Length: 212
Image (cartoon, rainbow, N blue to C red; front, side, top):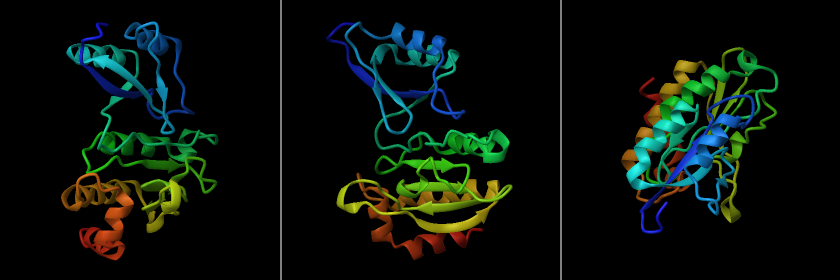
């Protein structure tokens, strides 16, 4: 890779599975598009950041996809869903719901980077309560939705329960509506928890619930 080539940062992972894992094929294809002295950055959100040449971006994304890697934009977008390890199994902890939710929201443009998290039981290994949007599976097919959590500095706080005991379709629709309102009314580079404080939790809740 020439030093004069413009680089684009790309976030990748192997999708929603039993833990954050990569296989040998995926590691090889990542290495194929790296210089010997180049490093991968592992984020707290189960993603790897890799810098790739802008003029090879679509080619690289295609090769990564063939290897089973999922590519996401970096910046003011919804990050891929952080999850627990599904220790009790795919169906019991709702892996299909986590996969579907990730497909619907990851990569959506928002005013500032938004971090969603999911956990398959009340233990909360996916840390849903200290992320912007948090989902906890609480019943056979029911989920509690929290918003506004943040883990950083003096602003650190636990998310607030937005709606409990949602079935999957209700959950998807409600998260969609929340993101739509944030996209429409959030200020540029305004973190989600600050948007909630300014817009009003009750106002946001009313705007979303009146559609249901």
